[in-house]
Image (cartoon, rainbow, N blue to C red; front, side):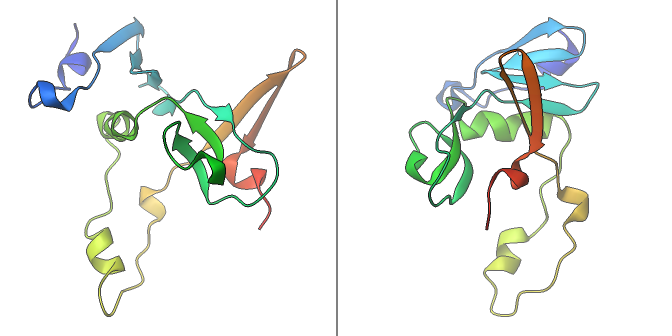
Length: 137
């Protein structure tokens, strides 16, 4: 096990996080998520959930509100969150305190954003789009 794999230490067995498996140099499988350290990206397997109707969520866990989402996944939210932390993504400081305050301030979130790309294959042709372009408001 290398230092990246060792960087995830569960507090106790109650956390139930899966082991990180090295696929090849710089590529790891963490509970179904593929972490690519070189490209600083994660890949999450998901299934198209609906092609029309109202959408409230981009991706939900298969036990979540799938009737309101574009995609569903078997990957637990905790694993996705931990994957981002392993890649050194930083949460926005005081996000919720500001959001719920009586006088919320305007905050520049641009340094904390990431791009979500959806890719699929149909009859041998590969497609890729930003998730935000898969729905109409």
